[in-house]
Length: 114
Image 1: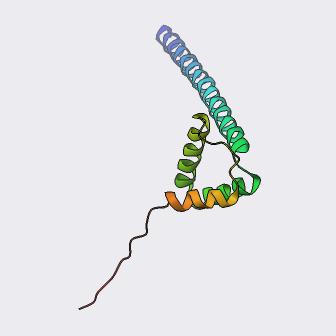
Image 2: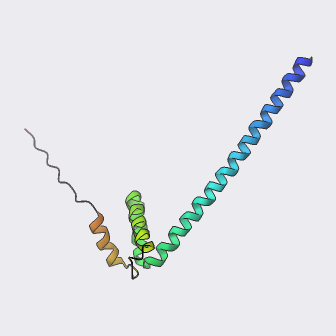
Image 3: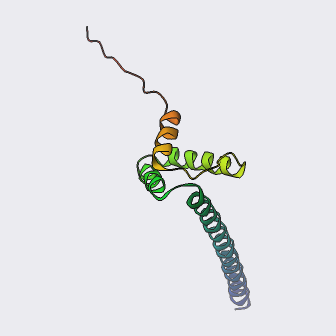
């Protein structure tokens, strides 16, 4: 009988420890999610300042098609703005020119059959 009580007490302590660990993980995840949201909000605020509405719309459409490329373009634009190299708001035509310069040349693939 005494062994059963000790075993139950050990199980109870382990369960409490696991619950505490899960609660700590939840707090850390919530803090990380909040930090990520704040970082993204700052990025969007900077992009709103340096891009005209039509350019922001084009970049959003690009993000749906090629997310990694759009993020790279956004990062470069933000970096240029932080360095003070952008002196005017980027409109749609300017963004198109930037995207054309950044887009790699397409390789032509030829298939020959013998």
